[in-house]
Image (cartoon, rainbow, N blue to C red; front, side, top):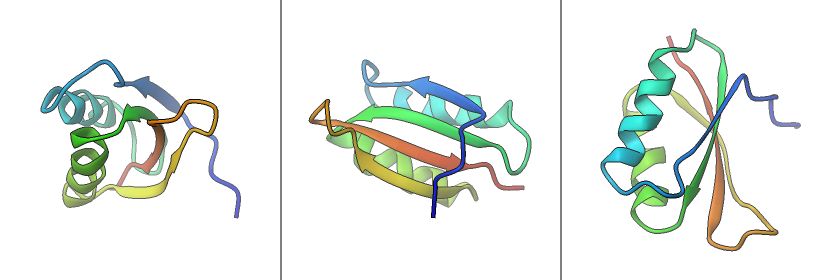
Length: 82
């Protein structure tokens, strides 16, 4: 199954927790239900905390995968919930 084309993208690789989740949440709040957000994030706390927090807030983690040409950097695809 192909991943949906993102409606919005943000890069939080240079941010640290808790700003990684704050920036993701703020972006999701500007989106409508069903839209897709692509988040680029680094390993460590952001990789652990952002997907968990997004799910807890009612949004769907569609995909989480390491970017093959940039080790230690990940692509998180989120579908905005209602």
